[in-house]
Length: 204
Image (cartoon, rainbow, N blue to C red; front, side, top):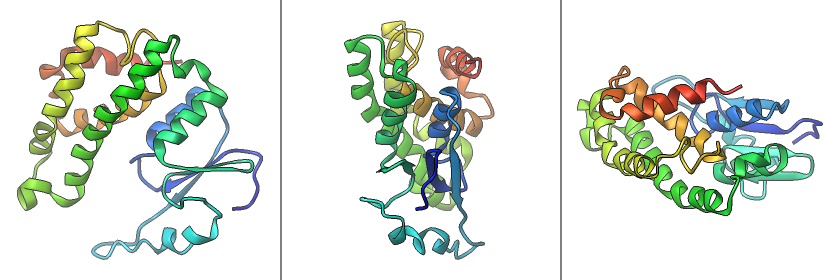
């Protein structure tokens, strides 16, 4: 990877795991280079755009997304989220030890929600060719229920407390996808998440 004065983020030409990372860069007002790789046309969806350069970039653990910042290279999306927070927006690590620890705990549950909604989007999952947007959304409600109930019990403004944190960026992106799947019908089941969704959009 050629040296750059700006951090370089690499990912597929989709929202996927990189969207919430991009949001963090924009929030922290960090100028970054957004490198994207496109799959070939259907039905093969050839991935040579990435695999042809994957071993040449000098990544310690080659994967997407990746981040280059000077001499540092990182892969794994959660590590990238936390690095951006620590370097450019430390307030996103939490205002208290409890908020920091809560984010570390909840990331496991948010990650399960992400996996539950992502893989069937590509494969059909348990529904196969009969999958619909509504069926996919409903299939992840048990995962979303746990997060929703936790937040309702705590009565906090954000996911982990009163402070906006790096995990909110990751969770909001998943929530926005499920909202899209249900054509905003999600809010009837989880009304408090509609306010959460809107307050994130109102961030400066």
